[in-house]
Length: 226
Ligand SMILES: Cc1cc2nc3c(=O)[nH]c(=O)nc-3n(C[C@H](O)[C@H](O)[C@H](O)COP(=O)(O)O)c2cc1C
Image (cartoon, rainbow, N blue to C red; front, side, top):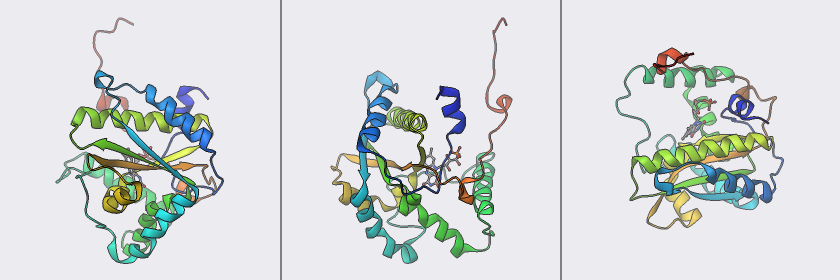
């Protein structure tokens, strides 16, 4: 698969087939993704890959808590969205949520159906493999950004193996459970999870794509001669 196709076909997949992914494939992706650039070549990413019984174990820890603890969970270890979120960002974020729930026929006012779908995050949307990206608590914005680049490189490499992904900051809401489960040392914190597996192409939740702003809305060009 060429890079353009990988970029164009990546999307946040929210329904996976149970088909297992071999450990060798996951190792290969995680290793190759470390070609991502980082400031000073610090390579600040730390990756925890979980599959099989371990995934089931983590899901089992959270399942009984969903009904009572969502949406807050254990409280976030870091604030994900700016508060307040200014325009045009608020509208984009609202819009993508609307599209997602419309795809599965859940109306805005049906809060419990929305929570049920949101809770699918904590099942990794059925994916057989989970990745957690951790960062040094002492690191700053440049290293966060580097981990973002690493995460995207994983997502693109996954496409080359016929796999899809969904980055999942939702796991930050259960950071204590994840910390205990992964035995994360005190100096690290989870930046994001990621579901990895084969897409269920028949699932309505996978049947839509998020929009993007037109080029001129976010980029300027000058000095080009052709
Ligand atoms: C770091 C990060 C964390 C995300 N966390 C979640 C999440 O917890 N659950 C989810 O369903 N989508 C999550 N997303 C997916 C975004 O909603 C998605 O990337 C965005 O709407 C654009 O859609 P696309 O990825 O399908 O192109 C996350 C994306 C990123 C980059």
